[in-house]
Image (cartoon, rainbow over all chains, first blue to last red; front, top):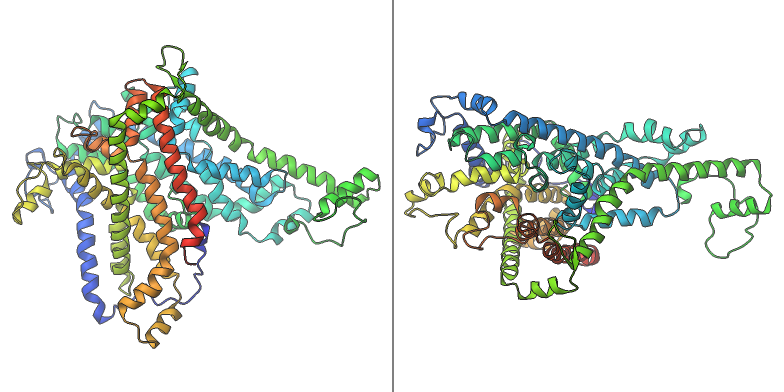
Length: 293
Length: 336
């Protein structure tokens, strides 16, 4: 699927130049605007509800532009007896280690597959690629049994350990390493650099966009994961944000939707911020590998 | 891989053995065995060994993870699917009984029907809406407007399915939800979106389209921008109308993106779980229960791990088949 991304971008295209719209296009642009408005409704609703006082929480029609702002809902989320801030810390901790792990193991293996010669290289890479089509639901039962045998269930390690490596990460970064000019590596070789030096001093410094893409995709995936935490974690204090919010949404504050929406707003904030800063890498990574992550 | 070697002169000694494709590596290896090793050859051999060892070191962590958390578990899962196992008692081999039970299990048939229904409808809508949106947005417009549009359509992609479902649960509420409130204006009386057998699955699909179609839009936009402008100029010169241009230039040039999206959305939809468990919990009855929910419930609530594994195997086969279709037929269907 990599070919998709490699459609020549230098070719002159008629479309999508920014600037003044053609006169006949305004009708379509307005239709797209209506669509965009409809698509924005759920998130705007979430945000405006999160700022409503309790007496207006169920008000219909909802005040799209609220006249009163109840920041207290956010305070409630953070200070309530239900440990929302702990969910956040747990999610952050797991996401951090999984992302670091995948960057390290993925870049190392990707470098070897892209730039080093060794017997079995193609077979091993093929095996790795094949694992991309194994759905998590197939492996999760044996992994659960394994982790419960070594007493790691209901422990964050159960979510971190199995995710430290990923075939996807290797695949993505290999694409980036492959595009680097061979001359750089030849020159380093002649100067006596070993594989480790080439990896650390030549390949990695140039792989910035690839590492950024893997970071944002892994971050998203891990932060938003619900299925695996649902299976491994039981104790409320150890839950992650998706698990905690889904499990406790009825109880966050005796069913006040404003508080639940405030919790969701806080939970999606890191992902949205990260995306605003790094959207280029996210989309580049997706189109380059042909995998959604 | 000659590509990886610095360029140096032709082989240093005649090739001793092995006709056909013999790379420089074996030339040197031959020299080693015959003892006529030059200074340069020795240096190279040492380097090659060093490179090989380093390579295995580099891939080691990945393959430890691969063995422990992919290959091992797959073998274990296949074995488990031929056993009866409830965690508390040792696994008991039962041969093909689990698979025989699958064939007679009417709920198994129901959850697969639901999953396939969801997969086909959600994938088509995600793709269809995504293409329409991309065509609408892909024109010259002020940067500010283009930026806002893309954000509005793409933000939902980033929101976890669980969070989307928590929001939509409130929107779908029968008496207090805003969807019914606004539908009342056009004369539609209150619908129990998530509680009614007829609307529960469509409700889940609508949310899925809201969440995922922006992804299709971005990929299609990237595809559209890769179409060379000369094609459109040629079509204009030939007097093609808008529809003909779309049919004979845009659509064929988009087939790689469309094919990619069908596979990605298809595989994702076959594993649908998060949104259903939050919105309907599989109900009413079994009308929205998916294959993955069925696996989850059998494994972790009923502790029938053998049976759950056999259901998981069926999903494995279906998803592998979809993936292999991608590898095998991708080139043939796709116009590059």
